[in-house]
Image (spheres, one colour):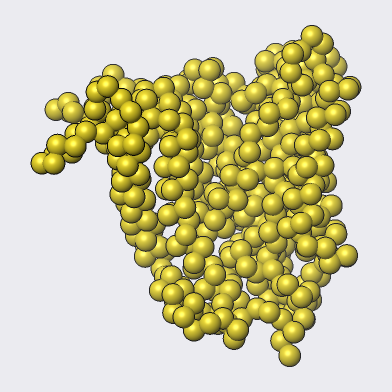
Length: 432
């Protein structure tokens, strides 16, 4: 008996979820904007309370009328958070709205776009699995494997190819392909376990994250570690085999070409999911597995293929991290895979929505760095503000997907093709 549908959901829960279901795109955008404003208001209060508890010699902000002093200025915090992430294009307090000296090719915006580029790949990785009704928590492990495969492949081939632009293009292409193959292989493992052994993909992907991180660590430590390195890392790949940071400072770890490649992946995945036979199998298998099999869809093969594609996208994210940001494989791989889960939920699991969702996440991360440089606000409080904004923005979409899972809305029981809750928990058997 299937557990999908709203028959067992309490009435009070259904009433709470109903307002979030069957909203148009415009209404969902308005809800998201309202969520951002609400999160800013709540964060404003949190900064004030923290500033009142903290000790300081001079108040950074004084409340009008009451005259209470606070150690942290919430207005400054939000100005730095959003304006600083873009390199301060807005001249706050000056007669002119825009700073005439601002250039888009600054290091702050470069760091924001660097984070955005990497999160596009991990967001797409999680989204394609969600569309198939699979919860891929293993994008982080797939990214680690892809990054290591890229670094080792480029280092092995570099002596065999001529230097310069020609050899660099080949190395970037082959290295990225190696990352996709490595990540795809690592994603296919839980896909096969799900399809043929009915293993829960949440558990297997989480476990494989630890396996990937530790196996990669040992391999680099014992075999591929750069000679004389004080950290566990491979040698740097040649500069001509990395994405060139045109226009932006090299210290921003951002290459415009990498962002264009990420945009190409968005368009390609959108076409794959929405306009191909594989995409149709993916979407129908993710919403109504029993009906899809009745219609001729091979659910097991689709599961493995979906997880392979998902893992390959995560592996490409690892390739870009090596070839654009780090220049080598390093033990301290950032948690881009886990951030990709949030990006995908913010995007409604739509490939086209991943770009603005990744940019918002990159904006918050870039702004958090600026707050640490420009203010005395503790980094822990900055993390709270960032998490608060993400939580408020993601929750309406989460409630919408939960409502679909509970059987609300015009589509009836079961989630939309782009919803998280599309996985059958009992193997896709029809309701009794």
